[in-house]
Image (tube, rainbow, N blue to C red; front, top):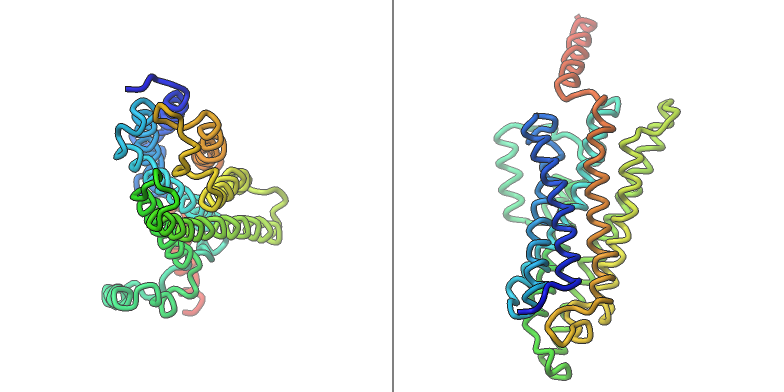
Length: 321
């Protein structure tokens, strides 16, 4: 068994940092400061995945490649963590739209006009038959549904590429099978990470469009939640760029034998790059999204919004009468 070195220490440090966020969210749930059915649920799911990922990182940092199953779990959980974090950022912006726009509706995710059981079954059947092509019929006017589908497909490509490459024999780098696996994994992982990066740029566009729209409605200052979302975008885009580079540049790859030490773990250089550009950026974005709790406490609640909508409908009926 290997000693507890820098790699395990870095994994442990961020395990503790994620556990602090995890504990805060558990406290917020139990004291009803945040609700289970809210935007924080997806963020809590992300934190849970990252806690599991960092725990695997600690075990791998100690055992090295004596336990390859833990290494694969670390890679897959890491990919899922980034996937959920990008979705979280969009969900938090949509929530701000729903609570603060005059219509209380997000243009990223407009409400369904027909919410009957029959309509839901019809959409489900067509989605099952047509798959992603069903977007043409039901979701072409719902940007978030399209983003969600694109992110899911990109996530599948990333996980497939990593899993497929793990079966390569790197003791024979010039073999036909190893080269084929490298080329396929590079294409799928780079494609998936590029979609994530593109969605990050679209996220910035959506945030800026929201801020500009707020200014046009006469708001002199930018809402602090939108400021936090903009700041959170910076570590997200750094993480996205690093993901593309890591997929396409062999010297940054997990599977490059030159990134391993003779005792079975990663080199100090590789650990530093991975944690500074990959783990730190995700943790900062997660922390900033959690901080929106403090900037959104004065936003109208869903109950208040529903009451205002009922009052508006009643006033409209009275005016027609």
